Image (tube, rainbow, N blue to C red; front, side, top):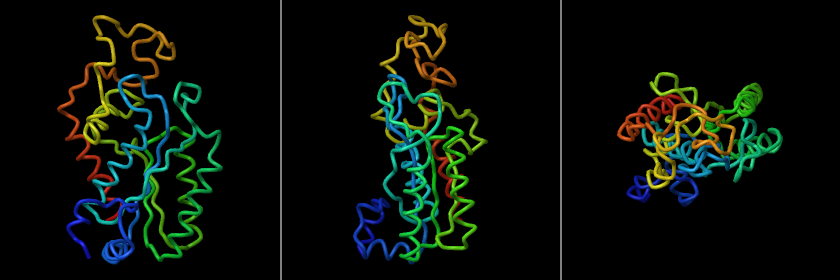
Length: 235
């Protein structure tokens, strides 16, 4: 096996079959990141939820083993469905079908563990992944499913949010080139005095701590802590 290449990537889609077999013989775990295409204000990319989920899964797989599937950029629920550049499913029907088919194919390939990790954590999305875990595992079939989400790491010191300090820091650690705080007017120029549902708000669609005051030097520590927390799901 080309072990040098495996050290470079755990992305399933970039590996050849013999490389996949070799890693899964050691750690029979696949990680499946979930996200959305969704408005995250002007300073963050619309794919943030899946980008952070994928990045954290890759870091967790480096710690605990296994391979990471490409993220699914589909989610449901939350209050941003009508915002620009947002594509949200009306309910979880289609997403559940993709999860079911994925688990069925992994069962046929004798994969022992599937860890579903959602960067989108609207109530409807959380209910979807929790119900899928419960019902699939009740069948007694492999792979054994564990489902969780980015907001369930509760001891990070920065409350989970939408496009605020938390998500800005997390994505900055994973893909710093995608974060551009200069796209936001300064607090002095445009104070946070309007309802954030108002398109005139300087941080329209942000729900959580104002990202304009964030200390980006904290980003790596936050990401590392969350990666170790997530890795425990596979141990």
